[in-house]
Image (cartoon, rainbow, N blue to C red):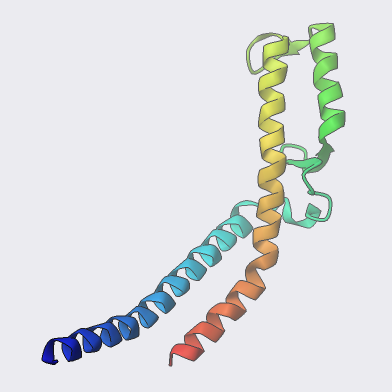
Length: 138
């Protein structure tokens, strides 16, 4: 009998102690997301005014402070390969491998730009959630 009471008591204590741990984990996750969003806001500040255009089909070209369309950029790369234009990065004419490598980079950049915009856009709601969680804890 005594053993079952201790067993039951330990279960109650474990379940009660997991609640604050769960809140702490949720709070830490939220703080991590806020930190990432603030970092994106700082590092991507120049691209933020263009977020309405950065939908995965375009990317922010920081050297010219412009948004470029992926498909148009692909056609430009194909043109550089076709004319064997000089590639200043490799110090030789553009070839298919150079174009494919650059194409992969800009596709990845388009997705990153879209994610940065989404992170910054979510920042106010994340801060509100943090405020509510901290208020609920106290």
